[in-house]
Length: 260
Image (cartoon, rainbow, N blue to C red; front, side, top):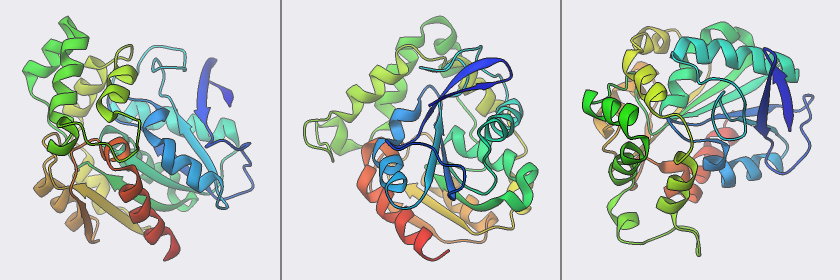
């Protein structure tokens, strides 16, 4: 669906069903340089099992207009405005990598509206190599290729796919080819409030980590789980969990949601 947020046209994926703000809503937030397509399997499952799905392309990404936002705090502000525009009142937040930093920052502002928080392939802080940021500024596709090499696990690099007929790295490359990357990476690198925000989270939480993660290493994800006072689920995959191991990622989420 398309909505207007701060006078800008925004695309929201809804998992293949009409958006119904009366249903409990699952909000999926994509990572750096990505878009709603990284949540294809997870969004569709929740949309057809009693939830409304709200998976936005952040401003300047893929199907959403506007300039890319340059800080995690600004992205959280924008998210609150987008949720208000769509009439979302009660929600579950799910964030991958940078998307989780946005979820973490938004959580304090959502207060009682927030029903649960899921972290996927992420950490409380995501420092980015300055050389990667500079490459993203000067040669965005070269930086995207570097991230695709580091972001997917060994089996996927050798051609394995959890979805027959779909090549996850090619999907990632297609998404990242035209999206802002330098701004996203700089925003991640600059964000320093994750530890403080995580300590204030009061709702149920889940942490899903990739055992072969070279972007947000597994051990930093474990530290996040400790901050959130929850256990971490490990999936043998690279950083791009929602694309690379979509079913395993979905199965972990389903188990968590059934306990809420």
